[in-house]
Structure formats: structure tokens, C-alpha cells
Amino acid sequence: MRVVLAPMEGVLDHLMRDLLTKIGGYDLCVTEFVRVVDQLISERAFFRLCPELKNANAYGSTTEAGTPVRVQLLGQHPTCMAENAAKVIELGSHGVDINFGCPSKMVNNNRGGAVLLKDPENLYQIISAVKNATPKDTIVSAKIRLGYEDKSLAIENAQAVESAGANELTVHARTKVEGYKPPAHWHWIAKIKQHIDIPVIANGDIFTLDDAQKCREISDCQDIMVGRGALMLPNLGQVIKQIAPVMPWNEVQALLLEYTCCETYGDKSKYYPNRIKQWLKYLKLQYTEADELFQEIRTLKTAQAIKDLL
Ligand SMILES: Cc1cc2nc3c(=O)[nH]c(=O)nc-3n(C[C@H](O)[C@H](O)[C@H](O)COP(=O)(O)O)c2cc1C
Image (tube, rainbow, N blue to C red):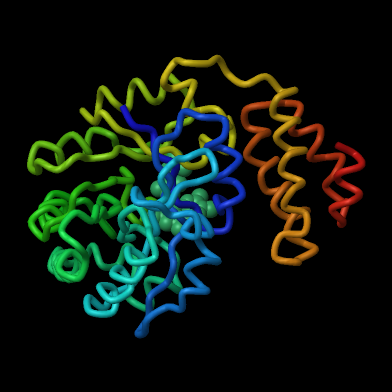
């Protein structure tokens, strides 16, 4: 079984990837999406999104703990997506992931993300172009939802991804219109799996060991992807693999302190206060202590004030 850390824009950046993969239990990370419009993105921008590229070796980019990191691209133009995919592979990304699931209005108005699911040909053209532009052994993966408005094209979209040459597919088991509303329809992943042969990674609403077991059974998938769950319970990967119990609060507190290393990240004074509050909002769904801490730091504005309190 592989447990993949989900791409989460504005939340799961390289600092969080480092912190979580150091705990263990996660086998692969996918970066936040980078938006491809109509030109080649600069190396600088790729390094900012994925500093792990700087440590890339023959096996590709990894976090400090050695977990592979794959860059995710979002865009609509096959040629431009292909050019950027070739670039991230040249820079050392452990494969390239294509986002066909983003529900953001702005992104969809520009014809990127989930809106592309309205026609399987969009997926086919983009994945084929990416596959043709990258070396033969490149892992090209796609992340889809079950559809845009409804699920009528779920299987056709998955088949388009496979026939274009993708090596694996992650399915977030909801349509764009369903947003993040529970439940995730894991049985739909099983339906998709019956029609394609590439590995499928099941995603959506896996927050506990029990969820993971149910999802794997219902979706018929070996591999799963976790996003919000890993922020609620930092060692969710280990818990799912049954190699460690739920992390006690004192260890989470130690992580919160370790996270203070990002205090000066990007020289943005608001980065740390904002990010730690955002993380506590997830943690409080698992730990009552996180809610108490959130109430205490809610009004604090500087990193130092928060560090003192911790
Ligand atoms: C704040 C936030 C940001 C996200 N950013 C991305 C992204 O950049 N790329 C992507 O493919 N999915 C993104 N997603 C979707 C997640 O990767 C995942 O599919 C979704 O949260 C369901 O999984 P979960 O229930 O384990 O969180 C994002 C989700 C959230 C909540």
C-alpha cells in the first residue's frame, strides 16, 4: 500500500511536506499546482514551488526525509503543458502530475482544472502531449474528480487518461459541483477501476484508519491519497499502515515548535502566524487541545508572540 500526501494549494507547501514526511508513513508527495497559461514557467518559480528540486538525484526530487516529490501542473494548452512538463522533469521532478480536479472559479473560467472533465478529449490531448515531450521512463500521473456537473463521463475520462499513456491516476471521488461535501463516493472509483489497467489512487475523506480500510475495500484500490486528514492527524500515514498509534498531543506540540523554523520563510512576517492558525484549524478536528491553543493565539499577530506562547 502507498499513502500519498495530497497537493493542497496554500497549505501543504515544502515546509509542511518536510515536517510530515519526517514523521514517516507517506510514500509520495505531490506539490501544490503551478498554473501554466501560455508560456514556459521560469526555473526560479519552479524552485520556489518545489525547493526539493534542488536536491534532486538520479531518482528525482525528494523531501529531506527521502520521500519523492512530484510537481503538479494545471493548464489547458497541450503544447504549453508539455513544454513545462519537460522542464520540470529536466529539473529533476519525480514524475509530473496533471491537475484535472481544481474547482476554483478563476481557474475554471480560464479553462483549467475540473472544467476540462467536460470533454475526455481535453484530457487525452494534454496527457498525450506531456507523455510525448518527456523521456520514456517519466511517470506521468493525472488527478481527476468524478466529473464536472455529474458523473456521466467518469469512466470515459479515466479511459482517456489511460489511453493517452498516463502511468497512474488519482481519483478524488466527487464531482466539481459536489465540492468538498461529504460523502466521497468511493464506490465510483471501483467502477472506474473495472475499466482501466493503470494503478488508481483513491482520494477523498480519509481521516482515520477506519476510513482508509473502508475506502480501500469499497474502491478496490491498494493506494490512497490523504490531504486534510494528514493535517488533522500528522502521523495519519503511520496510523493507516498500523505501524504507530495516533500521535499524542505532546508530540504534535513539538511539531508546532519545529514549524517555527518557517518563521522567516520568504521573509514574509505574516507567513508563520497565518499558517500555524490554519494548521490548528485542522488539528482541532482531532485534538481538543488544538482548539484551546487556537483560541489563545487567535489574536496574536507576530511569530515571536506565538513562539513565546508555545
Ligand atoms: C485548501 C485545499 C487546497 C487544495 N489544493 C489542491 C491542488 O493544488 N491540487 C490538487 O490536485 N488538489 C488540491 N486540493 C484537493 C486535495 O488534493 C484533495 O483531492 C481533496 O482535499 C480531497 O482529499 P482529502 O479529503 O484527503 O482532503 C486542495 C484541497 C484543499 C482543501
